[in-house]
Image (tube, rainbow, N blue to C red; front, top):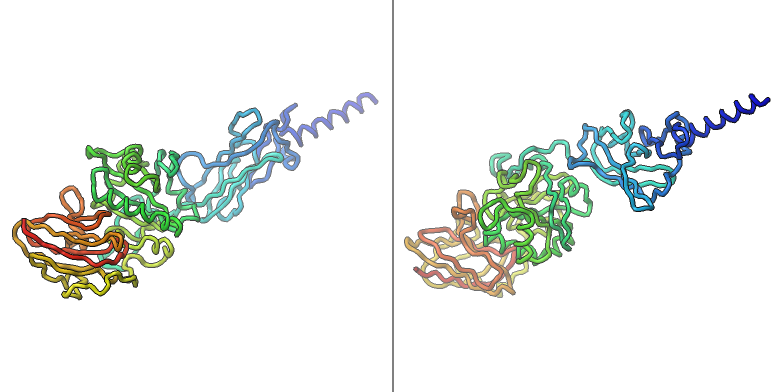
Length: 455
């Protein structure tokens, strides 16, 4: 009888250990393993439904390790960190039950490593980890599998005429020390931007700390940043070089931009661009001059406008509101004319082919619609052009225009030849014949007076 009672007692102990402690003697459930497909299995394969919460476990944080995004067709692992009542934290990835909200996108079935998942599909998914009564989750998405390893301007993809075929999704790039509004320094990764459904477009403003036109453009973007962000735009300022023409770090970029635009946008330096040890943007085919504007559609990470298609002149609020529209050759919008009847006698001079001859002296005109005004200066020597207007009515710019590139002419440093400021009036000096374009920033309208004088 004693032997029979002992046998029953031992059997009960084995069953309890099997079902509650993962089969490890007197364990209290700390060794329970989350099985494939989010189904918990104990060491003996029976007690998943009875796994116990480790003593003192308050929270489970789920995250992606490393910097690489989730790519369709490539297995991906996750990390579960347990937060305990005594303030300690430790990796409990091998102890939790893993689960995917959509196994057509990400599945924990089939991999003997409990925290590794296959990625058969593409899309948004929530990964959860649980043990006992405590669980945590992490919402994320896959990165476009067909992304290009190179960053290239739109017009290099085809003949140069637009509408243009969009290039492949942009490569996966990140910064570990991006400066966010509010003084927060944390990683900025294209994978996380792609997963942020509150964002419609990313506007990358690329410049240098020594470039006056870059600073001026950043100031103007800062003025309308709240409108851009309300429409879904995320603004990222990337400084390529510092005042010594050396690769610019994120800390220097932040210090420079904060002095001029305050706490606006995300600020990074190209010296800290990864992967590759920095300098990625400087060597890309997109940045051909300063400032360069690159607009990326968040939903598929494709460049929808850049300097090769006139991104600097786009209404960025409108782009953020309608990112699926073709912005490589947008139609000219209707604007509220502020000219009050003043327009140059040489109208229409809205294209380089229609440019009006501008002689020494003064002439009145106005940007009265969505089109710029073009003038041809034929002076052989040095001259100065002044555009007088009221900035509070409309912000106007003036530049020497390059017909071959169909964009502003750049000097040897890559800066625009002309004048782009936030002040009343614009003025610059030049030598020899030149085609001039006057335009409204973000399709602004205002009357103006031109004065051309020899130097």
